[in-house]
Length: 346
Ligand SMILES: C[S@@+](CC[C@H](N)C(=O)[O-])C[C@H]1O[C@@H](n2cnc3c(N)ncnc32)[C@H](O)[C@@H]1O
Image 1: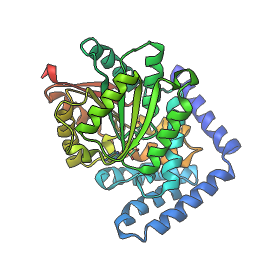
Image 2: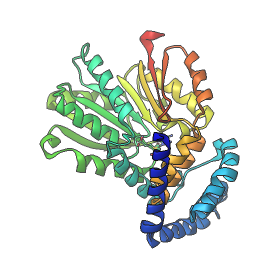
Image 3: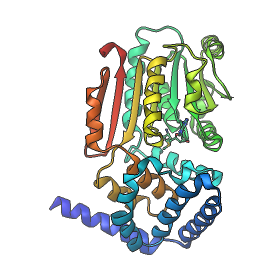
Image 4: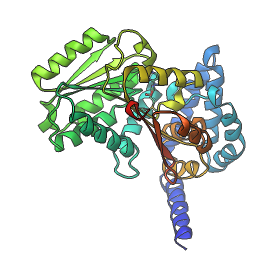
């Protein structure tokens, strides 16, 4: 009975949004996106992903076309998931910014708590590491996006009166998305705590720069948030083994090819003895709820649904249980997982 009630409420919300609020703004936005994608399609490098996205946005114009796409086109795209790119992966700055602005807004909501599990795990690890360290801690976020995670972790640490300075290194490949991160931190750290942080934008990092940052954080007794506009794989050179206290990434894995995923794992294990990975997994229920919730915002709908198509299935994830040093925590009903590496457990 409770299930039927829940389904009824969801359908009601869906139709309410569709008929009452589905605005011309939505249609206008889809039209503008399709026109930008048609232009991008002329570049051979982006022809295929641009076409996939055009098909997606044409289908997202009406509920019926979208349901058709979900049933008949999406499974074909999933079979070729390595070729699939989301709108925000394409070189269209306006839509990259728009997607990440909306994603950070969603991540701020306590329900559904999109980044809550990784935030909790990071804080748990920091409290543990602090017991044995006196120097500033060095954290690295691979694919930091709008840096909402850093903002939320910092705010919680301020409340907990965590007194060891932290250097957060936010590595982000897109300069446009990096700017969203800088802006987000600037706007969302409460005034009271602003004096406890410094924000820096760098275009490279190496062990000498890291040493200087550590000294600066220790002397000033301030947290430093470094925004690094780089491909995560550029860190292959220049940093020393074990130089990062904790590496984490949230919803990055599905953006990488299988080869890149393996390279990332090797790089992370070289740099740190603790790694936290957070992402979603692909199962049928994950398509229903986000389709309804994000229907009003086509770019968010695109980011959510295409990333689910690229995610691992439960079965693929379970094969990771075998890997030494790694622990998998699956939130089966919520559709996401944490994978935690601890060198001491190898
Ligand atoms: C889905 S977003 C997640 C952003 C953020 N971690 C979050 O959870 O809100 C993935 C991010 O990873 C970035 N990214 C993808 N490949 C990357 C790479 N090779 N190096 C650095 N960043 C990358 C993308 O630009 C994007 O901002």
